[in-house]
Image (cartoon, rainbow, N blue to C red):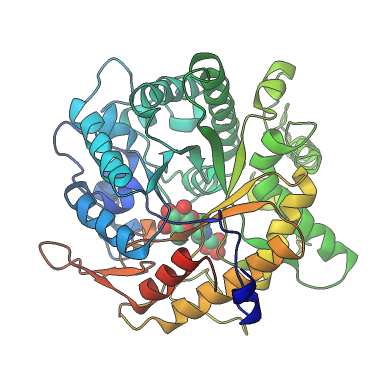
Length: 475
Ligand code: GBH
């Protein structure tokens, strides 16, 4: 309003949405109650404690399965307009397959949504936040094309049950992360040595699954509901490490391999993989003696099915990397890193957080949003995650500083650059199980006492700060 401008405040449009996010495995706990099946994160943390920093599991986590009403109360305190959470596939379908539906799972998410709606908070639901049913992993997980069809069955069940309650759907959270770190790194299922092969199979089947779900919704549900369907990408900014032509090219190639890999097939005019990915992987595959490219080809029909299969783009943004050209010769062993051809680093002078990878670099946010605007013709974007991990403690002034600086950068992208951003989600509502980092990295606006039997939630200073923003829409 004029009043706010006069005071020099930075304000977002009145209808701009502020929310908070979590994910099922990171907060729910109750890993084996009332008919829930095992997911790959259950079996991974149980069988490979050595791969988790503090050797812990999500068996109980923040116990949101039992404490969701308390979580909703915190959101009321924050005054947020929506809650982004995910559904655990194996809580609903214990083996991932449609022939056995777990009624307690169906009931649980109805109760969560009803409690949100009663409190005027819109449910934004992620269908897949990394916790594949273990049985499907035994079939090869995302490297097996049939898993895309099983995902469609699961998605249909979600639409049938929750179609009238959900305000926005996200099919997948960060395919880059779970394909690259799961099928070529140390996230579940922990296929450490598979990069350059299984990661691309995963990506291929995930893109097919996403496209099929979008088309299925159009034919079977669109007359009934008008809910928008999107997908969330991880996009930390990648800046050239010097102004040399080689480094500028390497940084752009890295963006295409990170975000373009999944965004280009869905959001570009032409569809399909980014041309630079196709070119590099085809030619490196040949040099390595493969008879075909390690990056699979879509059929023309698949390209069409996937192209345009989202109503909005979800963006997870945390930090910035520098990229320089990799001058080493290509190794005979396939890898995504070699295919990409850039070396990632971060500047020693960038302010740190309590993690290995989040450095505080607010200007990267504006550049990432502008890149998406340019590449994909300014699609509607909702920031589905942004946040910073700090140590335990309630006086988190560094989180307040992080939020302020990142929101300023986003505000400039919206008001000066006309980036089509309509909402922002803070990661996270509460401290939770941070994957292979266990409970050592805390992202919550509320602290969770994991040692207390009732997993006590306590507001941090940042929760009051964020509540003011979500209520006034001003910084
Ligand atoms: C998101 O992804 C997740 O969606 C969410 O579940 C998670 O809790 C949140 O972020 C906070 O981490 O070692 O430098 O190569 C995070 C994606 C991908 C970030 C792998 C860390 C390793 C970077 N992660 N990445 S590096």
